Amino acid sequence: MLSATNLERRDAQSGTVLLHPTSLHLRAGEHGVVMGPSGAGKSVLMRSLALLDAPDGGELRFLGEPVGGHEVPAYRARVAYVAQRPALFAGTVEDNLRLPYTLLQHRRRRFAPDVIVALLEAADRPASFLGKAARDLSGGEAQLLNLLRVVQLAPAILLLDEPTSALDALATAMVEALLRRWADGNAGETATLWVTHDPSQARRVGNRFFRMQGARLEELGGVP
Image 1 (cartoon, rainbow, N blue to C red):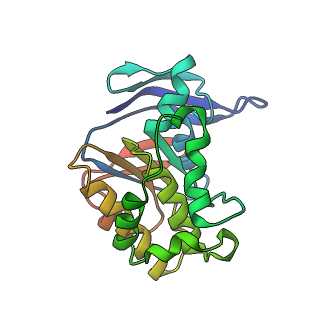
Image 2: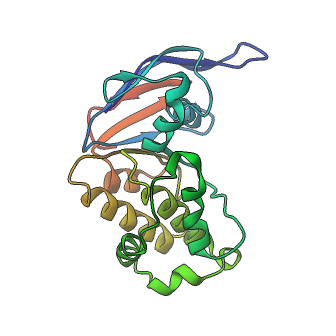
């Protein structure tokens, strides 16, 4: 589904290597986990794969086709980046969920409350959650909303950059349950790439494992 070949990045000012030439191939049904110390380059890798920061070299392909130029907005709709800290807007949870449908990329889509309610059930949240004010959400609920806003658009791949690192155990379980429901509902046609510092979470959510060290990516032979 997603193929990066010799992807690399350098700091525009100093020329410092932020990501050594990196190759990564992610197939449908795979759930990769990237671990490593802070500053190792994990977020640089994820933002490069999402094309939020332009790579300085290498090639990125999605479903076998090279990505670049005018294809980037459509690519980001299918390969979605989820940051550690969600950006929410004024209004209710439902207002935030409806917002993406005002964007040009999703103008032909329609908000589907039944899809959202089914996902909320997996996270043990009632349908009334849709009416809650975004400003009143806990950290876990804010990340849940952030993920709902993304997965309702049916991405093929989720790039999850430490989405639960600031959450307690209960909120983490809620987020993981939502993502399991999303993956299970797509019958192996989707994939994820997680960044986490928690080996136990890596074992729960992953079936391929990587270590990032010194801006270099290495695949591990087994479970961490």
